[in-house]
Image 1: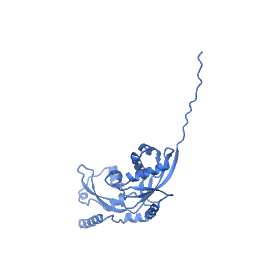
Image 2: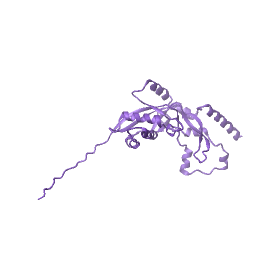
Image 3: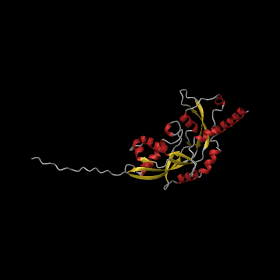
Image 4: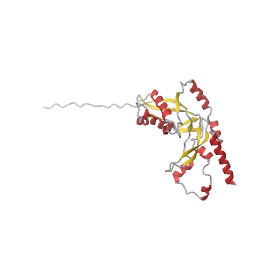
Length: 255
């Protein structure tokens, strides 16, 4: 007579994932170009661009003061008037993982969390004009006006799954993102420019030069930024000369 085998309970134990948290400071190594999409561009995407009238065709093509303001991410309260989407920093970390041994891009996307929707940006913005190439087939040249911060810094809170990731690993990954990716326009990731890069510091353990830079830049907070938004200064001589020409052209066309 066959003997029945006793049933064996195969209990699967599922452990809850744990989170670590670290607060880090990003101190700009190269200037930052803001690249927010302007309200007109967003309205055109929503409703479709209307056909230009004869009056539109006769008007001056660009309004630098408006374009400057619309490239910035501006908030109504907080220590600063300027911010940058936190998703941009997480994206930079994910891209940096492609060049970082021991971690994959998909792991960054799944295992790292940024509780802040936006990160505050300290630093005074300046109005800057650059010659750029349009995305059409002929690569038509154009003049683009953006907010430009020669000095900037930010503070970010990062949560991460442990023990898969460690605090030191997060510091290294954010530092790598600051070195080879960056944020904003003309950033290091794109190849042509080397803007929007940063170095990383802990709020509790900063080198003397980092502390000095942090103190100097964070003095350029909301009051300084709001004044610069409403009454912009020009970033360089070329921009100042173009703005002088623009003012003369406005007077001529208004006559």
